[in-house]
Length: 434
Image 1 (tube, rainbow, N blue to C red):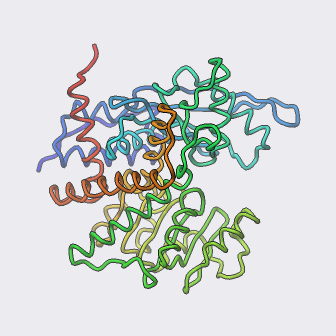
Image 2 (image 1 turned 90 degrees about the vertical axis):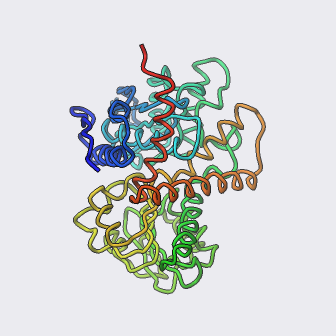
């Protein structure tokens, strides 16, 4: 098949590897599916981006100005949806790339939502609680004109949690004069959050791994059995990785290695995950845990295991270290943890990759459930939330493997084709304004 040439954006957007990888993956999917170049070119750049200065008074009395962003990539299917990231390396290009992935993710799993993302360039570990609150509230005020329950609905991401969403919701509501819980998701239960939301991303990762194991066996290929004979390594022991570890442990599957920013742990007989979680809660680090050997993050990635879950940040598996990756299944718990070049190498060696837009979609799915519950003022039990999450994830996984079989492509490309196809039809129906 001859390749159609699509124009790659330049300038402010493509300074980050994450954005470049997202565009390359879109281009590959577009070529495989024969996408109209007019649609592809529109999807390569965001609809709207807001860059704001966020000045706050620090505890020592000095004023410091932080840089904040909110990018809305595509809102053809509905209001924007995407997290708020507090990280020292956040920049406009990275946020734009993450917003693009959110567009494809929401479309893939059938949500009536578009893709957006936000962030502030800050090291949240250096902020006091009062400084974090001031930063969150001022940022919310600066972007308030483009967010709202029917416009764009933020959620937690790296460096933020339910408390930050509570501050965002309160700030937005104070400026409107009445409570508007639906402006954010991932809120505390007490102010309109959903049961199961905090665990949803990690839980969804495990659901897709279970589907992948069954799928490989159905094809007669060697794959993990998701029992005590199966070994798992998890890079990143935060909101996603820790929950995934807990869920896998409960399946009587061995988690032999985990890591956080300070380093990792390895125990060939399997880690006692409840005990590791208690240690982490008490010490705020994995370093020093006595019932395991200390390893580096690089050593964890190259550990001989059946399943590898990169659940920390983007770009951790690259052309430089891909040769040391040994897992049969790699589940992208984080956004963009495998570069495009490394992805091709792994697929050529027979690794089964569960792409991020499918693997970690549990968070946005339950965020959608939270949004719907808030609009109806009718809330579901955690069992109902988990049942609906499992159903959506199963349907999305089935659709992606069917597309992979049809186009004879990799899982990442198949996932993007699934999401882009729905977007393509919606964009063509709505047309181009004016």
